[in-house]
Image 1: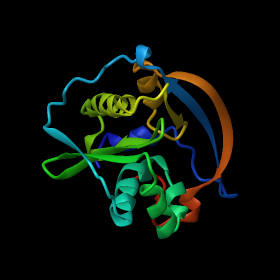
Image 2: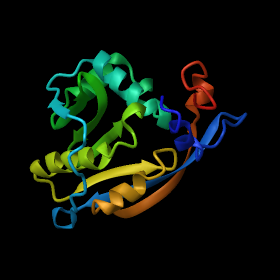
Image 3: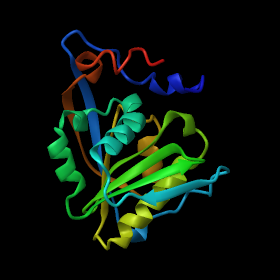
Image 4: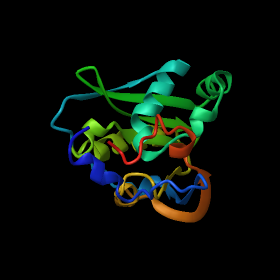
Amino acid sequence: MPKEIPGLFAHQPPPRSDGRLPIRITYLELKQADWTRRGQKPALDVSIARIDRPTVALYRELYDRVGRPWLWYERRLLSDEALAGLLAAPGHELHVARHDGALVGYFELAGDEIVFFGLTPDYIGQRIGPWLLDRAIERALARDPARVILNTNTLDHPRALDTYRKAGFQPVRSETRDLQDPRVLWPEVYRWPPA
């Protein structure tokens, strides 16, 4: 992980003894007329491939490598069978970005939603995020929804909400939730403080 990356996690609160993790979730939507393309082609040669039949093992690797720093864990709770069903559901799409074979990030679509979107830590700060977000929006809009939805929370990248808003997403509601803290559930996986 690059030296400057741990500072990205300074906004994440330390684990609490009760194992709870309070977050604020913001739900956003984008209508095609409001989309502002922001991403310039990255300096690196990044390719995006749609994975038509992702395996559970591949999906778990993507989810972990991209999501662990942001404390994603809900899909870890799914059995292999439940996750396989989700990945095979009609309207589900998985698009993986790579540079010279290395995982850059991915986005996942279901219905009118960008379900997951993110980069691996090594590629953060290289202006790939806005470009990849444009590709996710472009693909989501090609599915002809009335609008594209997504959500972000206070544990995600500190500029995530601003990035989505600059692309044209508008907040439609927010809520506060108290989650299980994965750093307490799996301390050997979710180290604190981040290394």
